[in-house]
Structures are given as C-alpha cells and as structure tokens.
Length: 147
Image (cartoon, rainbow, N blue to C red; front, side, top):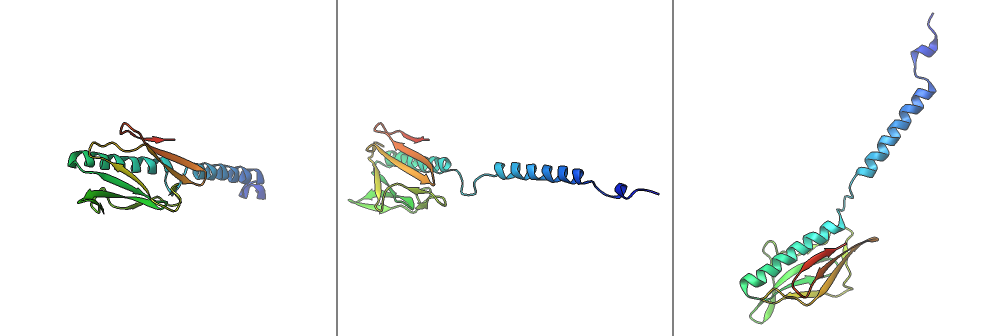
C-alpha cells in the first residue's frame, strides 16, 4: 500500500511556491512604468515644440509666442499688430499629461521669441506630486530641461 503523503504536496512545498509567486509579482509591479508618463519626458516634448516655435520665428521673420497656463500650452504668431493663435501642427494647443501642471498661478505666462529667435529669460516649472522638471529659456536663445 502507498502512503497518502505521496499523493499530494507538502506544506513546505506549497509555501515555497507561494513565496516565489509573491516575489515575482513584486518584481513585476516595481518594473511597471507610471501610466501617466515621465514628467521629464513631458518637459522635453514642451522644450522641443518651443524650439520649433523659435525656429519658425527666425525662418518667417515674425514674432512667435508660447502661451503657458496651468493646464497646458499653445502658440501664437504676431500678425498685423495682434497675436493670433496657431492651429496647425506642431503648434496646436496641448494639455499637460495627466496630473501634471505648470507653476504659473491662475494666469497665463507668455514667452515671446522675436524674429531673431531671442526671448526674455524665463523658466516653466512642471509639477506632478513631488516630481518637478524645469524648462529654462536662456538669454542667448537656448532652451534646456533642468531636472
């Protein structure tokens, strides 16, 4: 006759398998990226679009501006003495990624590129929780993401 212990798993074997499953689950959860995206990536996208606006100001010989609000940003072109919003890619109005906001208070920050591509020095600070990324507009026309 066979013993009944040979027909199943022991408690130790079950505990080892459950521990391994738990450790693998923790590794998967830790390795998963934030579904909202990386705040520095958002700042770099904004900086790239700002650089496109700067280049457009130089190529077209007209002033371009970036409208930055707490919820997002958009682009304007100076035309016949007035600022006109742009709606063509890559200058469409864009909202910040989920949970991100710019530190501009309740108002609107305007960064203006003159026809030479130069803008007044400015900083746009993006925040999400305790994460922060800064896009710096230098006096010499440089646009950099500061972590």
